[in-house]
Length: 308
Image (cartoon, rainbow, N blue to C red):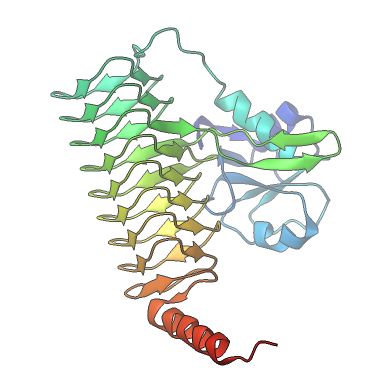
């Protein structure tokens, strides 16, 4: 998430009541998670295991829970609780604004777009031309939808990320201030759920078609001309490259990449990144031919085994 106007290190430090290391006028342009940070961004880290990754990332301000040597050209914000203060910054620059109407007056809806009864369209949503939004579709704030998009009944775009920190008193939620972006010629089936990014975008590429009852987690990027069948669950921060086919009841772990043109057969558990151009099956995932050979060998072994 980028700020509307750049802030200084001192201004952010004052906001969260934290000491800092660096020039008081050091410029900060936004706040983002580690996988989408750019120069000018704040990133947070609260575990020594990830200190080095955060300090060496593209982020130029690190919100951290321990004073460490500051890399050249960067700044530090020292916080007792970076998770809490990351939320505080996110909420200050992008607070929740309740809607007072079914279709927000700030929404932009293109020529030829059809909005059926009981559709909710939130603040600052942008919808392109010649789209079809069927009954009971819910589109949260700041969602961007291209041209020639069809969204079937009961689909929800922009719900919060499933992202929590465990504390002694329960679970603390990381606020979601990102967006959902659907490019041109996307079709979404009925009762799909596409979560918004935490600070970035959850993106579905041009020409991709998604069946009924599919879930897409926060900050996932789905490429162009993909096919995804019913009851698939895609975790957060997944990259699905162009022209991937995913059949029904597939599940993925977070933070993986599925390469261009891969085919994931039904009921597969995608537990790791896989190269493109091949077919995959099973849990743990393997190339489909290898997995079928393994299954045949196991069956042969069990059949020939003497049972006493």
